[in-house]
Length: 190
Image (cartoon, rainbow, N blue to C red; front, side):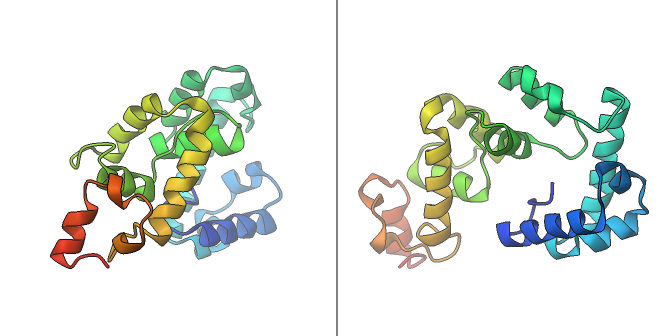
């Protein structure tokens, strides 16, 4: 939740602020929302995220009768994915990130960088939403390659295949790219 609409650095700062201010998830749940927002301010849109975090914690406590999701480890990837997506404000990307990074499962999150690079390379169509891209790309990428491919696409999207002025002339994938020649010809890339 904290990583939505911000950088990794800022979401890390927000999480550190949350841990420094509150010693348990129960404290986060029962704290005044403005206090939670103040603790995560460095992550951006803190008022919205604070409300959402408390909503999620409320639902978890209602379902599990405690603030503990350790039972998810006993569920299949699909069951975990659907459980997480049923929480307020949790979508495919957040669910896939929890599966991949927190649980060590072979999920394939699609963030803005992955989505943009996949479209430019022609891995998905230009009108495919990020939500639809999760299932499309997840099925196509072999499980053992999902983590390295995800990380590679993010790195490539941040450094070369940037949102504005991509560096197509420096791209190792230029010969395989559907968009590179057009971006260069139009002057939208270097």
